[in-house]
Image (cartoon, rainbow, N blue to C red; front, top):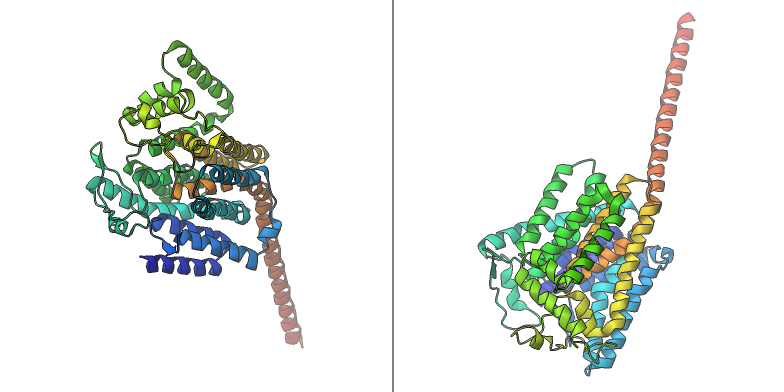
Length: 471
């Protein structure tokens, strides 16, 4: 499958040079979602995926054929994205004995996360481009959702045979995983959790198309419905939780002016649970999740990591990337620690400094959205901002129950890029609308002038005819 992966990378790269930059992002997303990440091209000890090749083509096009890099201006969010990966590299260099292998891993992460983020920041500059990307994501998601629903009902993954060519694990055979009377769908993704997260992350954001669509709105509703179905087809509690939180956030759009009292009520309720109960509030909330049994494990993971010495002696730089911190001995009878909490994964791998920068990065993204919302004068823009905020908020909650790896890591950084460009979209949205109106008025005046000239010519012709008749 290496030859096929290389062919996809080459065809995708050629396509990037033939289309507008925004459609280059679409090509990149197609390669991420429709071609498994575990199928790679091995060059020595380095694995290249099709998206890594295509994202290089995107940047080559941007620097060779456009002036977009010269128009780019750094904001705080951009600097924090770079600072977070720098913190990871520094911490990993301290804790990892095999430094070169670690640096190769982080170099791959730059291709999968940092470059997609900056590709979005460089390319998306107006609402039209953003809507093109959202509509393309919906088109990409529909066939995946259909295949996922089929797999969930039958246990048959139509592309599951590709797992035998797994780049990092030998002898892998697709095996359906049952849960609650269904099968956990994964389709082209490594596992069902990452498959469900694709829909949970992008579904709420794509809902922004609804209020901005003048045609085909029914088709957009169908696509969003299929994305919900795709999320549930994964039968993943983390993905479903992120999706439900995001959908609830969107449903509260009408009452958004009351967000401050709502936050106060939630905080007070959590404090009351902490004071009046012998359990932590996150443990109590776990009783209302998709699977309370797995929620108990996640709650216990937090307690062991933060309050029972799990990070003792490792707070600053962490235990090291891909190192089991050994917390399972205090939780259950597993032979390994399942770091199903992205915040704890960062803390365990890279330490508290990297975690604080990661949180600051998300806060900076939220500030960009708040800035855009405050500057917006259009209800269409406010709905776009609200939908993106809902997607990021749901993911922030979901990260307490799942870790981001594989394609969701890439998608997450693209969502951060969306937040980074939103103030620019809002700033150019009104100007764009005025420009469209100006052009319409010019065309109207031009048409009226042409009609007047034609009428004058016709009148002159009649006068000439009359004068010849008099003669």
